[in-house]
Length: 403
Length: 158
Image 1: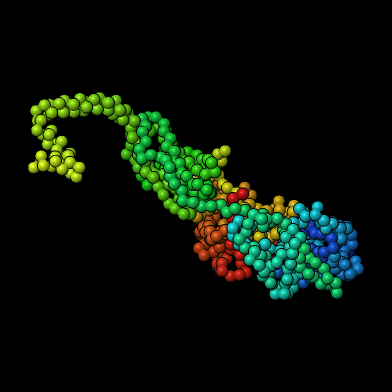
Image 2 (image 1 turned 180 degrees about the vertical axis):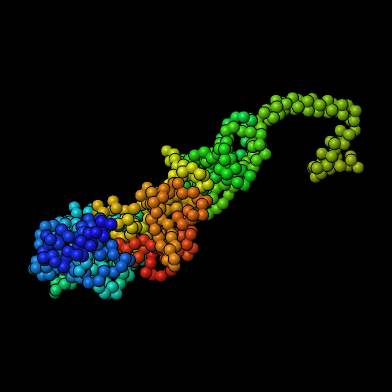
């Protein structure tokens, strides 16, 4: 609403306003400072584009606008006023070449018969030294052992004829041989292709474009700081727990961890969850008696693991007949592991009875054995001979005995 | 040693998001201009403007994407014949994964070599893209093969 009012004031007042920056500023809507500061080095051509024009792109076009520039509180930049070095062309402010004294806030005023607005942009021009590199550099990242491009950024003002664009690339101030196996630059683009990126490729790059203006040659330089990242790997996860059966006493609390081994694989794309009789735990137990615990992601000896426990509070009889499964899913695989809860009490009886039944068996066995041996000596002999039969080659005499 | 996150695929409880860095194959990063997500080149101190992408997985291949600590989410919205990418003020950790109306926030990621593409789950065939020119809005395209749009991104955990 305020914007609309201001526009209406601007529209009704502008025909009667006298010319001059100060009055214009009063009636002009100030839209703030452009979010990007421009960092440049001295001696190179610099172009400042009217920042608010970019906001209009995609919105309704605003034809027949007049764009003027001024620096801080100084008078507007008139075409050719500051000698041949500074001028306005198609609404953009050209500083060719820029000097350190050009640093400051520049305000672009856009107006037509019914509209006026202003926006400022910050320019910082540095001495062309190593010390200014961190400020003027563009960080770029490529992935280890892949092929990718560096891009010489923000050249559009200087490349009217893109097909002819020829950029020279330097690494650590050494001109790159751009047509070897490692580097290739495609003519007509601002890209430098780096093949099979290695850790040694990281570092400081510089791209340079020649630019001629009014009979003079200039170089437009951009600095790039390349970082080489390793690609996060994806592996097939392996569920290493739980066991097929879990023992628990009714009425107690229980946590069954589902533990998944990822090796070098990334945690981020691996999903891990529990299901009960093919429904999600959340919808199967809306009261929260059985729920998934917090997901734990950790590394041991540089190998990654994920754990999600299934928590029973408490275990009830119904759980003994429920099919629980841990499901793991990532972009490479889908796996699950079933587990059932068994009542621990019945098992402890089994444990208590096991030695007793073993004893009975052993004693029984001995008794049977003795009784048998006593009564059927012939049968025992036959057994012995049968054993001998297996060693046919070594004991031929025994065979005869059988016959 | 253990890095803990409370992210679950099917839980109703909030899911902790993970921050990813995103940049296209032409090395353009994302930042906000006038509440619009744009892609371009940032130098020196301007790199602080870079928007990292907050990610909550829906399925291994499907994710919710947000910025500003997950307070603004990317959505594919159909208005008449037009399909566009918009930023909506919803908390990424509170988005239910099963609700149909939240489908507009879901993107299907597909990896190809070192790069990743994002197709909208609600607008099949429409991919997250940047323009070739810098400082242009991040948008959606249904012609991902066309050279004027960049749909391949480096997408790596921060």
